[in-house]
Length: 484
Image (cartoon, rainbow, N blue to C red; front, side, top):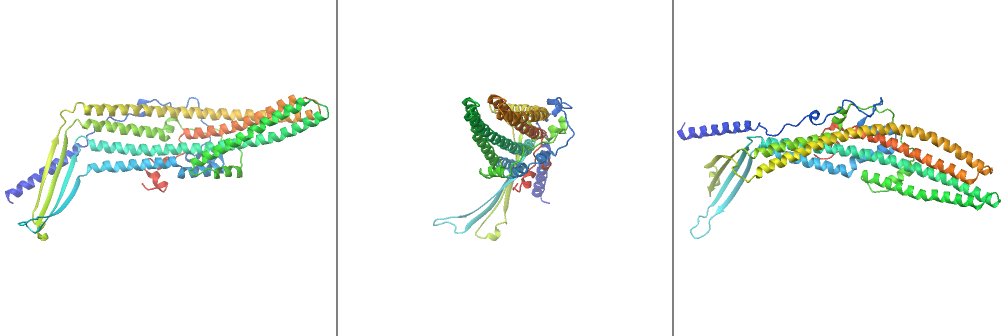
């Protein structure tokens, strides 16, 4: 072998060995290790205030236990058509696209060029000069800058996926809660209309007794006042029902109108949730909560960015090369002579006025904030479960007490009405009995609605309302029929 060829082969071997060594050096990471949950925020082994029951609920579809067809219909529509969820899906797609961009930094960049040249003038060569070339460059990831950026982008994708799941969890609870509110308002509206009919009868009885000279006109005026007050409450209830129906329409991604008509066409009682809801231990609940997982993923991404910022203080190695060929006139000889070069460079930051140090401190401060946000999400999750469980338990007792009060008030109102007709009591006594009946019936419906809302809040706090099996890597997109 000629000496020149031997030197070229030796140089190529050395460059290959250098590239392999530099790529192995990229295994080094300067990012801080993510902390374990137990080391940053103690989690109790059991619930302190909540008393877990025995009724297991399917958290991924807990709303079916309310046995309300409109809840099931609107939740299903919201999970596919809600526009807030659509925005979260778009953010997840964007995060995945960024990850693909960052992963490309591991590979060399190659650009090709070509051209044709012809001289002009009296003594110019009339042949066309054709040239082709390519440039390539590759950064050796000595200290894990590229790997750290990829790890951060992967954590960003996980955070975006968990944020999508968390938004779905919230939207599902909002839709189910608004349907419960609509059922409670419709029940209150029916109570008000039923009461108004009774009060119209009372007014007519008072007028007859006044015309007969049995009572003064005071009874008539009191009956008129009572009836007018109830009549005034009905339009407000109707307006509130329309507002809730329109809110449901927005949540399920459609214009107002159809939901309101469906609520009127298919009236139903306020949903009754299952009693004694079973709950997992706090640690398992936290693992299911997508907001806690999203906060943890954001912390991991910010810690990786701290490592990326630290690598800017260390040497940067880069390989580059060019190759080209040209021919004049005869394209058949275009590749007869091929020239090229390979260049390896190593650069080290000497002085920048503290710019890189500032970036490192900024990245560390962002990571500290993400750590605090993670701890906050853990505490908020524990608070929501404890509060919702106690609220559900007390709501059961309140509904039971108000049911007894409503039964007593109803019997008292019937007795008072018959005694007033017989002239045994004055109208004021009847007025008090009627008012107590209206208030207890309304309070009972409100308590029933609050009980159903407490169940929804507890299921949401336990991490219900999203598909944890889909993970946070973008499989939700395929499940929704959307492009990745």
